[in-house]
Amino acid sequence: MSVKRCFFWLGIIVVMSIVLIPLLWIYLTSFKNLHDVMSLDIRKLVVFNPTFANYQYLFLETPFLKEILNTAIASIGSTIIVMVIALPAAYSFARFNPGYGHLLFITVSTRMFPPAVAAIPFFFLYKKLGLLDTHIGLIALYVYFNVSFAIILLFGFFREIPEELEQAAMVDGYSRLAILRRIVLPLVTPGAAITALFCLVFSWNEFLYAHLFTRSAAKTAAVGLTLFWGSLEIAWGAMAAQIGLLILPTLLAAWFMQRYIIRGLTFGAVKG
Amino acid sequence: MDGQATGSKARYGVWDIILSERYFKWVLVMPLIIVLALFLIYPVVWVIHISFFDYGGVKPPLFVGLDNYREVLVNQEFWRALGRTAQVLVTSIIIELVLGMGIAVLFNRNFKGQNFVRGFILLPLLMTPLAVSMMWYYFLQYDFGAVNLMLEKLGFSKVMWFSPNVALHAVTAISIWQWIPFSIFVLLAGLKSLPRDAFEAAKVDGASAWYVFRRLTLPMLMPLIMIIVLLRTMWLIRLFDPLYATTRGACNTEVLDWLIYRNVFVLFDIGRGATLAIITLFFTFVVCALLFRQLMKAMGVNLSSQ
Image 1 (tube, each protein chain N blue to C red):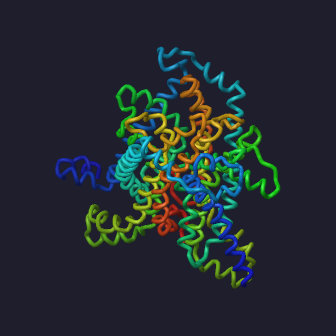
Image 2: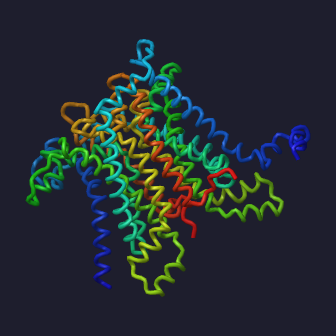
Image 3: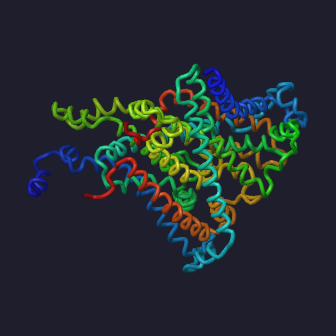
């Protein structure tokens, strides 16, 4: 028994280190000067003189704060719109199956297009409409980008609500809207919260559209990160600092999500 | 009945029509249909249209018929990119499923600090892909990358991670590191929701753990495995960020998505890029339609119109 326990904890430790060590390293690197970053001495990986120069550079000499603000605007704006569209649609798919699965498949298929399929025409359209490098333009693209995954997830959550519950309410004389408000919405709230979080994170992380459709006014933090790649001598320390700050909100999201996600990710596909 | 339905407009308000058995389901999906029309039909029609033209974005498009298609299909560049995409797809999905299942089974019990452990395992999935890729690009540097320094310390020779023979594997590995939590969590969710009684019956019958896993657990998790394969296929075909952060298509890593990107946004050969996009879309569509059918069958959703 105790040998088994030993193996179990060994497994946990191995998995945890594979996830955590790279993360730890990034935060360590963000406090290193260029000399220590490029050092060939293995001890310098952990032992070095910490410096805040990278963060100073990031906040004072790059538009990092503005980029973070832009990213937040695009993420929050698009998530709200996605939820308004996806909640009723997913409910309809789960209850009434309009279009006999075909419409659902078309919705799912939006995620399978090579991003360039949408990027090419929208690039020219946006150019004409003056939507390039605007928040609204980016939000619209993120709605397109997220709506199908949101519907797949919510579809599962709605399927978990027993239909009998709604039928019973209908027999009791509740109107359709009252059923939605009093029974369905409260039951789906945790699922909707997870879905919204996923949408927030995915838009926060999105790079290709942001890279193609924003230049300066609406430029997001992920695009700002590429600044470090292009330069002849990559500023690894500052890059690490920006990576560390960029993923910080997602670390918080992970903490909130792990409690509820176990239930949510069955997509309603496994029926006990 | 029909006469009553047509006459109902006059007698009932708009709300009654909206909430009627017949229209309510369509009213609910209306906003979605508008979004789909705008973001799906418009671009696809536009891209199919422009794929018959030679278009550089400045001069008016020149009609060339099927020339773009012929050039793409004759060119080795396309087939190599397709092969690489297929290679990345198959290796990633197999490794993610096998390792993901192993880790999910490992985690499928109550233990001290399980919330803490799960929270951290979820992390890579939520991190900005571009940031993750740049992070690994730094760790995998030849001279001073942490991975090579450690390899050297352990007595191995340094590996040139971003060289023509290795780079595609390195990119695949980065993508796996980031996405394996998805498989773990989906499978773990599935394991947790399995009905208990069947397993207890098997235990009473004295079935071995491996037998139970193969005959009970695996078939019951099939819908979820299908979902993982379907979603990962769709996500991996748009493998872009790990390439942008590392090789930028060099060193034999040019997958389909990068080929399209390079044609359109670097070479400004929009007609060619559109053609590539359409062909890619075709391959993806066929693969995903097959997967989706299997999935809906496994989930017991009615697909026919009877």
